[in-house]
Amino acid sequence: MKVSDNLEVAKDANLQLNYYQKEDQVLLAVDCIIFGFDKKDLKILLIKRNFEPEKGKWSLIGGFLKKNENLDQAAVRVLKTLTGLGDIYMEQLYTYSKVDRDPGQRTISVCYYALIDVNAHNFDGIQIDSASWIELKNAPELIFDHDEMVQKAIARLRRKAMTNPIGFELLPEKFTMRQLQNLYESILDKKLDKRNFINKINSLDVLVKLDEKDMTVSRKGAYLYIFDKEKYEKKVEEDGFNFKI
Image 1 (tube, rainbow, N blue to C red):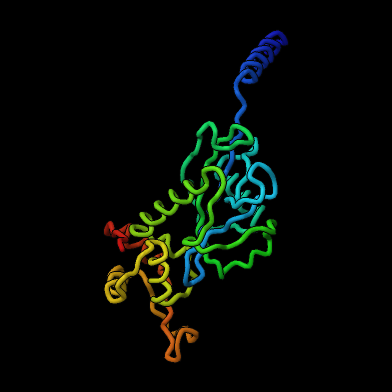
Image 2: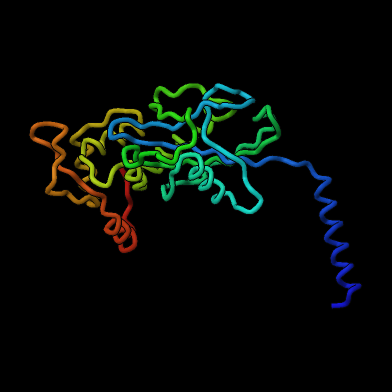
């Protein structure tokens, strides 16, 4: 390529760059809704903001997209940097773009939700002193449109938990049938008939009953189960099995 050709290419690149500089600059944020389960209640991890706008009010955990990463990478980074959590179930939820959603500056937010077993993590890496696990049913009012994000995440979680075994992401590896029922009652926000629930779970044939018992629940104890992921995936692959609670 001739020197003159290189100059023309550079000129075209500069023209394109100048063109983009004339466009409006908008921030792109990533907000993370972190659901946790402690064998009894469904909880959400919230923080109190230590900066304006809305300083001192409750908020979701979030951050901004960097130039060298995609959205999924940004969500993983935000979660890892602020909480120390990694390698957990996370899913993109929705994009929020109302012009006045953030009084600080024009900001578009892409929302993710994550599912974890609270007792399986010690959160040694958490960098936010004001972070707290709060029962979902007692969650305070949140800043901006974060309440709308949480409600949309709950609706998504309820739909998927009824047709997909993502609920097991919220449980320890070994769990009792009572803990499993507690989980679904927390997600659905309603009581379930014990006999019907157990029959339905057993009919799915994706759990393995162990010889071990949880002796903390009663003198007699309760048998522990594990979710057989390989068996579930094989059933789906071979006969179009549907997970439905």
